Length: 263
Image (cartoon, rainbow, N blue to C red; front, top):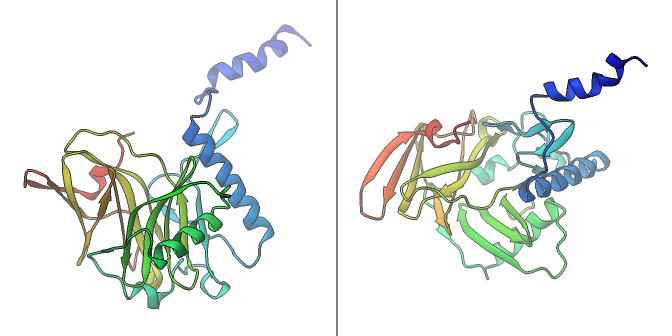
C-alpha cells in the first residue's frame, strides 16, 4: 500500500459534509424508537406502516450514522392501510371539530390513548410513571402528548385502535411572543387525509389559531407546547395562516410556513 492509499480514509473524512459527532439524548432516543418501529413493521403483516408526507425530512444521515428527526408509527387495520389511505377512518375524521374539548387525565379516553400510544411505539413501559399533556378530543378522536420516562410522544387515536404515534422533542425555550413547530405531517388523502402540527410556544402566548382553507383550528396549549390536527383532502403538513394571541390581548397573523424552524 503506497502513501496515497494509506492517507485516503483521512482525506475522505476531511471532505465529509456531515462530520461525526455524539448524538444528543433526544436524537439517541429517536434513533432507538425508529429502529424498533422499522423492525416491528418488517415482521408484522397485521400492522403495516405507511410513510407520511412531511414538511421536513423524516431521516437524517450523518457520517454513516442513522439518526431520526422524528419516528412515526402508523398503525391501523388492514382495511385502512392501502396506498393512499389514511391512518384514521373517514367516518371518524368526519366527526372532527375545530374547537377541541379538554379531557381529564383520569378519563377513559385518556387511558385508552395512553395504552395505544405506548404499544404503537413499543415503549419500555413497565411501571414507569406516565404523564399526560395537551389531552383533548375532537369529535371521536383523542389527541395527547404522553411522557414515558425520557420518551415524549404525540398520539392520535380513535376508539377502534386506529391512529398514529410520533416521538417528539422536549419543549423548546422561545422568546415570550414566539411559536415554533417541532413536528408536522400529512397523512392520507381525500376523506381520510389529515394534517397535524406540534410545537413550542413562548410564555406570553395565550392562544394559537390555525387557518387552512375554510377550516379554523384552535390549537391546544399546555406546558409550553401547542398541538393541533385537522382533516384535509390534500394534506401538506402546514396551515395557510396562523393567528397568535398574547396574554396582553394583542393578536398578530403570520403565514403558516413562518412558524417552522429556520435552517
